[in-house]
Amino acid sequence: MSGANFADRLAEAIDRRRTPAVVGLDPLLESLPAELAPAEPTARAAAAALERFCGDVIDIVSPLVPAVKINSGFFEAYFEHGVAAFFRLVRRARSAGLLVIADIKRGDIGSTASLYCRGHLESPRLADVSDEQMPDAVTLAGYLGAGAVKPFLEAARRTGRGMYILVRPSDPGADEVHEFRGGVESGRPFYRHIAELVSRWGQGDGLMGSRGLSCVGAVVAPKDAASTMELRAAMPHTPWLVPGYGAQGASSAACRPCFLPGGRAALVNASRSVIFAFRDPRWQARCGDDWRAAIGHAAMDFARDIAAASQA
Amino acid sequence: MSGANFADRLAEAIDRRRTPAVVGLDPLLESLPAELAPAEPTARAAAAALERFCGDVIDIVSPLVPAVKINSGFFEAYFEHGVAAFFRLVRRARSAGLLVIADIKRGDIGSTASLYCRGHLESPRLADVSDEQMPDAVTLAGYLGAGAVKPFLEAARRTGRGMYILVRPSDPGADEVHEFRGGVESGRPFYRHIAELVSRWGQGDGLMGSRGLSCVGAVVAPKDAASTMELRAAMPHTPWLVPGYGAQGASSAACRPCFLPGGRAALVNASRSVIFAFRDPRWQARCGDDWRAAIGHAAMDFARDIAAASQA
Image (tube, rainbow over all chains, first blue to last red; front, side, top):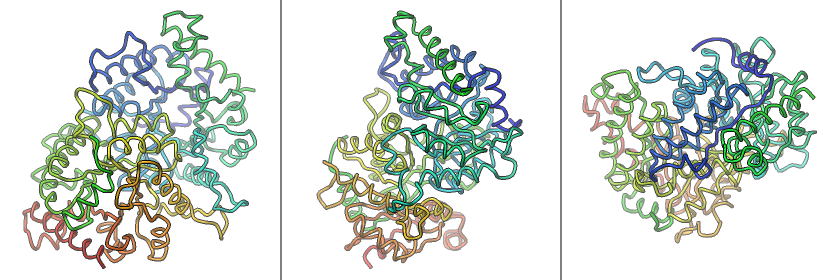
């Protein structure tokens, strides 16, 4: 694949669907609809069940949102069977017209990062690996500095793919790392430092799209409005992937400061609140036992809520 | 599996082999012996070639060292085929009497971390997954705080397995993250902060072994002796996994301050300098085309060098 910058492709997809909402596929086996429970207690059967469920979710949400985020951890729990299912789902989502973000959060030194890049963003030519099974973007940890990111930057430049680098996670427990200020009260927090690195990496040659945004994005959870606005101002060219909405507790109002004027430069993710909507009494009351309908209604509601927040 | 604390099992294995050296399996396809080159350009054939090569390396080094570290990134480059090969190699190494560290460097929020733990340290009962394919320990990034580590701590407590959490990486480019001091010259560096978190996590209930060491270790690259000694003093109960020796440039002398008195509490890793020794003129001169002999000699040399450093 080669083509337009990922930031441009994403902006077009958002324009088409009129919402910057992304559905996260975090399929917990224990929470699947009863009819999809695996017939036997094997990794192979579990992976097949996840694949069936996520395939249906993809069909349901593909007319409603521009992108899905598929969480690798939920598939790796089933070893090679889960990994094979993961890449078949990437392919299926892309052929349904969705952009696909592979949520892998990898981060290792340069020599190893090159190999992670081969397996997750740009595979060298292999007869049994299709370009269609490779995602449009990945999530990364910028924890090991520029060397760990470089292979992905090079692949993004060549292929029109992109990445979101972790800057501010949604887990409150992560604050003990990300609020670190050098042990000095007046110090800058660690997440601000990472934000500046990510912003700088994204302004390298050949990484900026035509709409003023880079293909190097950041994962930024909304916390208090003041610190979110400060981070937003520090990263004017960085598209954000925003976790924390829905089951994790953030409202669309909390997501508002994540957007640049015109509702640009942020994609808000919801996972459990959409894909497991059929377990929520609110949607059960409306959809009864029809789990597909519950997912569809929840996805539509989510897409509208985020569209409104982005334009507020 | 349940049994003794990982730190105790490792100490016994080191006593048996009389060296705290671990061989890293980072098998780059392009560097394999010519006779093992894959017959066709497929991910399946590439994974099979890596598996054959690493299987031989395991047989060669298993009498010489207590443990191997298998780098997941090099296998993930070949998708489900690589992942399947990875877990077969874990099993093979364990049945050859080696302890196995799966180098996965995962780090994500708690809900996702639980799934990574299922896929990499303790699988729930699945009929087609053997306990024998699960490693003795994993490497993790502590980048998301305690929540990201908790599922692994719980699994370690239950199973006698362990982990090494990244504290100070070997890549010089990582300094732009790990030397962060809050933007204040007098601030404490970020890696010291992570070191304290890791040390604290490792002292939780049921995690300390009988020899005063925890099953929660740290990945610490040797840099200048002064800062290494300071880190060592800050983590008196934490076993270290030390990267950077050999191809990455650190000498055994640089590794010395990583050990506690009596040569305890550090495992030094060499990857390329051992497994690709047959590409090194020094070993070629001695072993000719016999790549297995070159690996064996390099592993023996490495094991002796580290044994001496640990006792110096």
